[in-house]
Image (tube, rainbow, N blue to C red; front, side, top):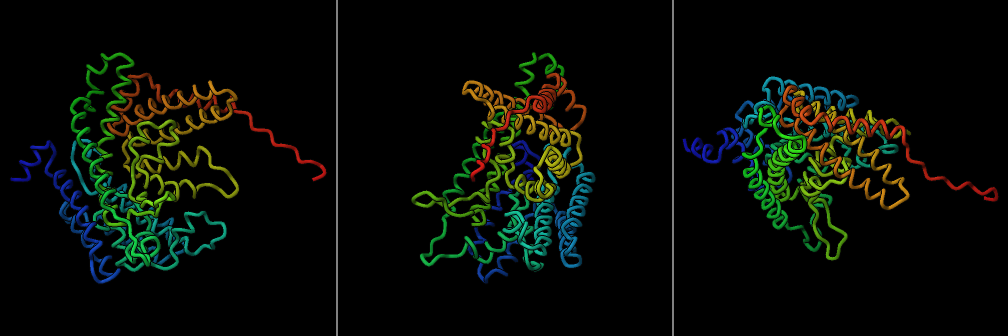
Length: 462
């Protein structure tokens, strides 16, 4: 009864309140990981046990069963068929995740203010796949491997305890960030950058944690203030159709901005949790004096996204760790040796991202739109770089900023409303401007190609 009254007081369902309480609990749980006695084995056990218990409290017993299925499939593939374990686990993991998305219709639940375990399963799926692919990469010779492959590949099979600790670590699977098995092992074993120095120097996480918590509070405050003013239901209401073109376009911007504050809040909490555990530490800055960096915990750069001057910057500032995962395990692995990446690699990567989120038309449309938006922004940038006059360069820079702002928030409607009908109604209300303009720029970019800088001819006497 007390949970009911608390939930109604803040305007959420009991399930969401339970999730938020467990999610907030990941911060003290992660802090206590620093104090666990008994060495790495005890820390692995603590990470796995606390993650499983928080999942049970938040989603119920069935959630852990859903997590264990792909986890065991991934581990079995490493044991039984190392040569093909990466590709096998990629399709098995995504297949199981898609099945859960379809069964639970998770997108509808999230849209209506509900919650289920599929969001956490999404994070676990990426962790499983990266671990298995890195174990697969351990068979390959270092020559010809990309830097990320060299850094993250696993030469020996992690133990089952290490693997479960990695997947469920202190509830980090609730909302990420996604990180590598090798980093998790070094952190747990106090090796690499986490190895104590002779001077006993170790970074203090408390200021960075406090900063993340303050950011979370501001983001939640802005979300709660804005959401009543910009409901998603308005896209299909008659009053929206009565708006003028510019007002409809501005409403799309404001609805997108409003929704993003919710994600900023969630990722700020997960950032605080990862920082206070110590896992978020990524090294020392080159400044004098050195300052600790916490990039491994960072999932979003709020100002970097809201003030992005190019759509190309968006994967670098939004859902950062998942974008990094997509780059390392999809985009780069589709590039053939000796060839440059093109639109195919970009579209395939965005399609995988769409399927990871769920099979709703809105997700598919949004990520296809994202690929087109980024390709258009690249064309504008090429024109900008090839321009010989500062005035035209500046005009193209402003145009790229406005283009990114308009097309991003136009595209985001599909991600938010999910249904095909609502997406097309919203897009059609602004005459599909966010689809037509990027395609027109891409086509124009293939016609008006910037001149390449002339290479100096080799001198005969050289």
